[in-house]
Length: 152
Image 1: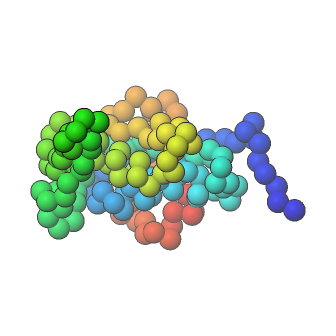
Image 2: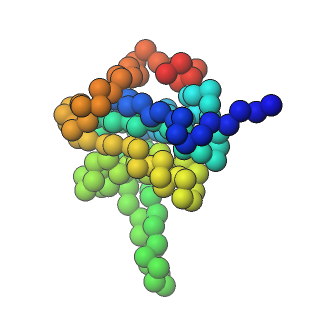
């Protein structure tokens, strides 16, 4: 028999990640798994079991290859001929955390649940953030590979 966890039984933890010299896509996969709650053994796809993630030093994040100059993000204004494109280089000048936020957003489910889960991502430039009262656990990316995400 399958046991489902009730909303009152769900506890959210806080994690802190230093994005210094981290690759955007690999960091986004780790963050999306934590936000969705896939690192917990009580994971259920239709419920929000995720934890909060605080990312600091976002201005020091990296892309592999020449994606920083050549990759393009598209959006549409809603008007005829209103397609807009921007590179990660220009987007990070305007909004430093938007590149990582877009990468994580595209790894989450579309709809109400995905939007709710995306609010658990907190991105900050620099090494200081206002969430020190929550005592976030530090995740060291240098000692981690893709198989260690389940052990968090």
